[in-house]
Image 1 (cartoon, rainbow, N blue to C red):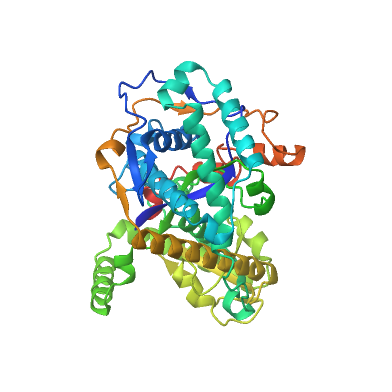
Image 2 (cartoon, rainbow, N blue to C red):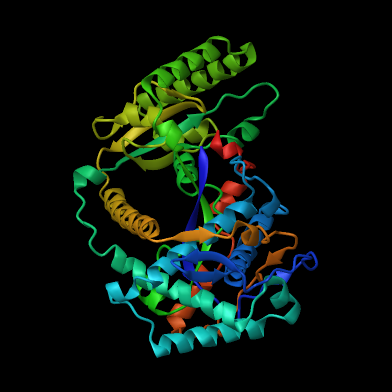
Length: 457
């Protein structure tokens, strides 16, 4: 599987977001005025690109180190062959290139930046410069001009993208978005060398697996619940990086012959499974069958799970669910149906109870996701068209100067009172959406001791 960077829009620069050097000064003194990217004869300076990367670095480094990952930008955290630093630079090159393409199409889409907008940008950049000491500003190459240009491009992009996707069909049928609801218990194989706790920490439940496929190693809180119109018109929008898995195109395009070969290989591996692993799987199956028998005899699903030291969990899914065996086994099953046999997967055995074939709330949420995906696809399509119709070049030598030889972090408790051009309510939203580690689900997942590479298994 390959890894893709995904950006989450958050309210941008304020006096409360201070970058702090932890590991000394960079020895790499770059020419900030040098062109890093050229879009149809318009240049993006290395200074603006470097600032975007450093801003992201601060948030990501704060998050990853909070999970015990030191020096994350020098590591290939996802087994993709690229370090986190390389991925961050590539993402910001793409993001700023798109922003410049959008800028050049503003008149066509009736989008503009007013004098009041420019004043807000200037005020925000000034607040940021004043909030940071000279040493930090020098390290990240932040000047008033660079920060203002960065914020201007962010504002333009977030004004343009809703217009770019305005013609997308927003109608989604119940059939297309239908989600069914299940509850389940997973019984994992445990060898003699493993404790059950350790074993379960290395395996994702259905909900966790699906979450990892969509927002794997999520270290930055996403501002998905914020009002797009009010936040974007608040003027200061910053994009930062999270990671999501994406099925490798090569895998998606695999031929039937390759699939058959893979299945044959899997069957061979099963046949030659070592005795200890086979015994562990047999024990897991026995536990699953014991639990299933309790429920079939009328015992409450959750209560029966607790009696065996397990916890029943819920999930909503469709035919594309990440755990294919569960999706297949629950397809077309009547409401309130207990699947008669444990479902075998690479993780172990699942006992599944189909609560409902149609969950209204989950289906409506899926509809929203489908519409957002359509919009994202349309925006990406336009960016590709504009790039192909024009001329976009990258200065590889200049971009290569952006290295990660010092650390940056954000304050533990970002201040919000210096936010520019925000109402009190928007300021509170900004604090929640700031570049900080996810304090709930991400922390829970981090406690499973599963490394980013292991989540790919």
